[in-house]
Length: 375
Image 1: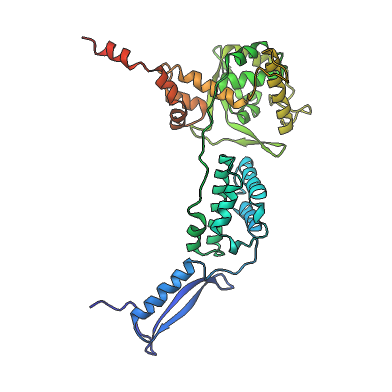
Image 2: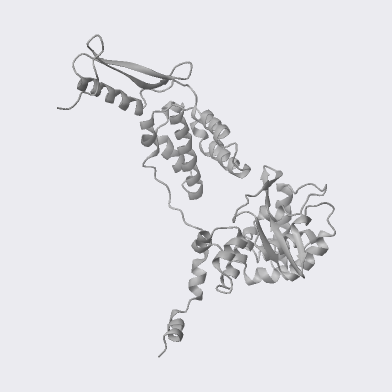
């Protein structure tokens, strides 16, 4: 015979005190007294019913807070330690794509609101992904704060239909763009930036954060240490130290031609940083945008294009990084995937995922088999 789960109290009743999902003024859990005079099994049914009601949101902290107000509180509490660019992404999602929920109370949020937020941005699949991530995290904190029942999380966040992500094809520099690099009439600052991203494959922020102290010449060879990155908080620049891991700190060889030019350029800069505003301070976002627009424009004119009929379009600093990695991948096995990943400051998996097709293009299995297995 099975043992009864609950025992009778001194009054002859079966009794249990179960958390009802709310809290006392001192922060402790409020527990509801459940009683049955029939049996332990009857009390157990009451207990399971209460737990189910708590999970499905019947017993939650009462609040009149509106969804977007709570979303901004989530951003302040949960994301204050994240990078400035990440915070800006979340803030944009809340202020632009979730603002239509500003007059909806947090307790009234339903699955249809979530799906509508996605539907409003269907033409931008990447934005839909960001909305999806943001919305779920906000609801998750609301469950933790007991403003929404635990069981409501799945009801609100499940079965959300997202548009299919189509990965944009990454491209390298075209032959026209490579020729324009040699012909364009850059300023020294512009040429220094172009040489660095072309010859070292740096991310934009890594290049903009470089100082004269990051370069070292030894035995006729020049290397550059990557230990920090420049990020923008709006228009304001900020230096961020990188983690001391294989994907953070790294030292890169600088090709001889680029090293010779950079040596002369560094002797002319007034402060430690290579790329600054006119007052010598770190380059601002608006100043960088102006510099890049000038670089792209000069390359376009060098290629014979005009503003009305451009010969070069869609050029970004990241294309130079992709060009760098692609050209290194074409040199496998003279250089290993592991070494390429180290030079890029990425993982081997990332390099393989993005650039595996290049290695496959180089493969000639018929020739290998013929050479190795010839009789």
